[in-house]
Length: 453
Ligand SMILES: [Zn+2]
Image 1 (cartoon, rainbow, N blue to C red):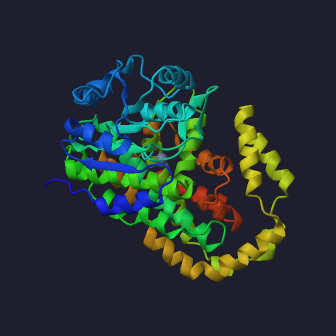
Image 2: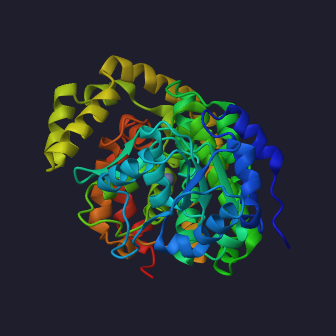
């Protein structure tokens, strides 16, 4: 069966997007890339940016098709593929100085790394660009901001999203399976990200914005439903996955916030990324996948709590003052850069005991409804575990280099590195965080039972 690209869904998403104006997904598109280019950029010249692998996978065909229309005056900018290319700031500067010499629209041919490098370099040259995707590997194609390593620190540097995106399904379905699997992990994370947003919405901290919510959640179950097909290179399954990833990016672009696509599961991933001393050891989506299991497992414990009968004054009396929170954060990390970032984020979401009392009253009152909303949003940790396995993703933390004690510590640390309100904060504020996490690792708990392979 061939994949049917739902123009309507993407078109309505584009109406709310800030930077991206054109998205085309379909089969056998590279031969007609010039038509699409002209529709997006008029009669301008183009310049190709790729690495050796993505040039071979699609870049050469894009180059030939555009050259046939006298669209190209310069040789493509091709990064070597050995050693592996990373989204480093130095590479952004190299590309930027090259682009400044050309009066041409950048066409990035690649996935995460090439897109991030071109996104930032084009932005710095004040030039809209086109991305020709080569793998369904993450939701960053249409996101604003570029994930770049600068001063040995991976960070999201603000910049515009691409003006246009072209996805040829014959290309992305030929990508190495680990890339598609990584995209699957990233999209599966929207289950817990959605649950976190539901909590923040209920408590009036971060109200759900319906159109942004729907872009991510409306077709999510369908997108994650049959992961086994991804391994076979099934064009329809991969088409649905990349459409889902593109919609996530457009959702973030529409509200200029990552809330629709990123919650507690991403905080595990960000935490582990901060401590990676080597580049690209584990792909983003694989960390998000394991983080999603970890968050879903915490949700299961929290959902067992009797929050309608919280003892508000007892919890407020034990609530730490701001100074103690700061001290605790400072003692939790060793890298000075991470410490400063974590202090800022933790203090930004700190509330005092009086504010906590109000929030807890709200939780008591809304728990019966909130609990049901969360249950219908979530999947169990075991279900997420099985879906990841079926997709060919790592599921146990040891498969991505984290022991169980490491993972256990990560729960408390992940809470500290982002100001975003998630299940971590909800569990902490209701006084059940430590117990819930302990139970997951105690005999009979989810992580104690989870199969290692
Ligand atoms: Zn992600």
